Length: 278
Image 1 (cartoon, rainbow, N blue to C red):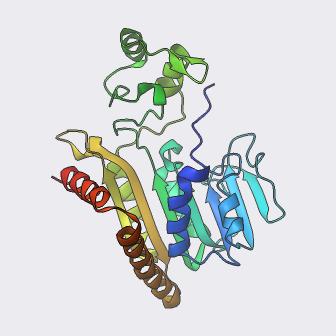
Image 2: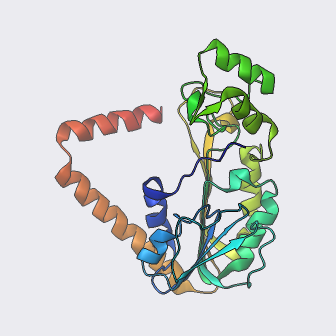
Image 3: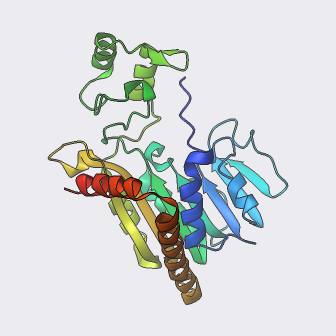
């Protein structure tokens, strides 16, 4: 079996920081959904969390990060045998695109989140996005998994000199991408609807998609990720804290941008940003 790519570590720091803006982490109880081998739990302990629980159905959940404050559960989030309203922060990145029952997954996260606590969830890359196959050997070949079946994907790879990655042959990769249950193969709109179903219990700051720049007439094919950021009803202070944190983060970012970037670098960034939104 092909191991799923691990998105933990340095690549996820923007998500850790954004989650810490949403919900208080110091002395908090944090649940990491899709903890994999545990690296996504480490930052929250470093931020001062009182408890960090990682949940994942894989056999080696939590094996690469052990800590007295870290507890691991070998289970899906849908079947989690954990107390309702227990966690101050429910965090998940690059996980829900692997979960087939999105409605149950969102409902479980909502149940486990404490009043005044937050859910920070980013599902990416989504199946129908250009690189929803999660395989770096197909970089530069958008939607190759959408436009082919299993045998067609193998033929395409051989025609383009793609042999596989990480020592894994292209046939095994094609089996994993096209035939395994590792991906939910759900359209982007399903994430919006599943998150909307729990929104009545939350103040929602975002339920939406990021779009790629690849040309397509269908927004469904351009939706690379889905974000759900919300605070559960029960504490106006939590909402106020989040809004203050967002203002402070934007101010800090603006100061750093003005003082550390050269004019040419700023100009180039602006040109790229404008081009992406045309």
